[in-house]
Length: 76
Image (cartoon, rainbow, N blue to C red; front, side, top):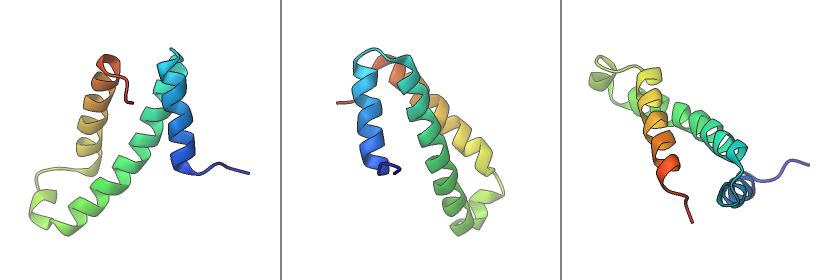
């Protein structure tokens, strides 16, 4: 049985605090998936913004910022 998303995220955070670098990659993969969904929704609702930005561009910028932040800070 697959564990709920929040439980999985908590396990990843626990592993990250324990020094498991694979957990950071799992967190980023999950965030990447969710950010893609969110940016598609955001750009669908804001047609003027879509003219200037593409879903992948917005997602990539957000993931890069998250990656850098996770290198500096471990979430509680």
